[in-house]
Image (cartoon, rainbow, N blue to C red; front, side, top):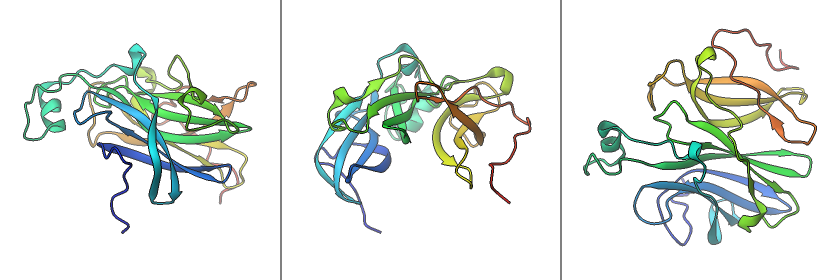
Length: 226
C-alpha cells in the first residue's frame, strides 16, 4: 500500500485514472473546487511517478450543460451523501465524474459520466484533445455539447454511466463496459448491472458508441477469443 495520493489543494477527490502521453504521466479525477459539495469537476495534474502528483491541479471540465446538471436529491439520498449532516443539504449536486481515457489516431478522448447517478439521466459525455497539445492547458480540451451515450427505456438501460474500455483478444474490436439500471428510479444501488457492447468509429475519428443494447439481446463474444 502506497497510501494517500493527493495534490497540493488536498480537496475531496474520487475516480482517479492515470495515463501516459509523450513520455509524461498524468492523473485525471473528479473533485470539489472547495471544501463543500455542490459540484464535482474534472481535474488533471502531471505525475512525477505513478503515485506522486507533480504541480497543481488544472480544472478541465465543470458541469455546464443542462444534461450535466440533472442532480436533484431526495432527502434520503442527501443524507447518505452527508452522513451525520443535514439531510436537506445539499438538495442538488452537479456532477462530472468517472473519467476514462480513450485514444484513437492523434486524439485523446476523455469520456466521463455526467449528471447524478441517482437519476435515470446519468449519461456519458466527452472531452477531446490533440495528443500533441498541452494537456495541462484547459483550453486544449473541447467538450462535446451533447451526451455521447445515454438512457434507452426500450433497452431497459437507465443511468448508463461510469464506463471503461477494452479491446477484443485479436485487437480488431473496441468495446465499452458500463453500468445501468434495468428500470426507472432504481438509483445508485446494487440493482445496477455491468454491461458490455462493441463500438465503432466515425469518419472524423471520433467514437460512435451507438445505443445501449437491450437486456437479453445476443451479442457475439469479442473476436479472437476461445
